[in-house]
Image (cartoon, rainbow, N blue to C red; front, side, top):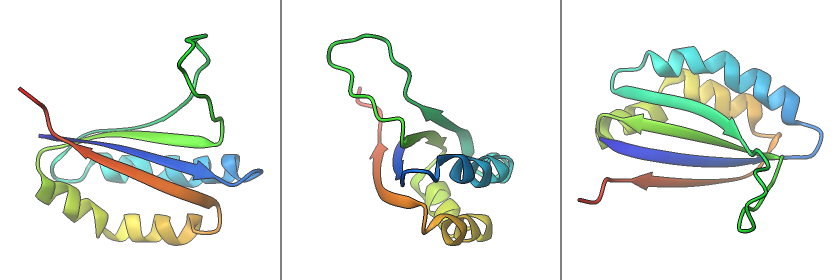
Length: 102
């Protein structure tokens, strides 16, 4: 199993449109072979002194059965469509692909 943390910074004034498009596609992603978890999240202020808040960032927490499952997701038709729909809304993207350390 692998984990993915995808952080997407959305341009000012575009967050609600972006979330509408993202959330419309979540059910299709969750049905993909090898998808264990796919959860869009946003910052919440906890008052922790080390916390960095950015309300324009959407962080997607993902778990996939394998790198092959993740790679299939990245070329899926619905993900290509999503990218096309949001390309003018996204400021930048950061992705971390993680494995468990034991």
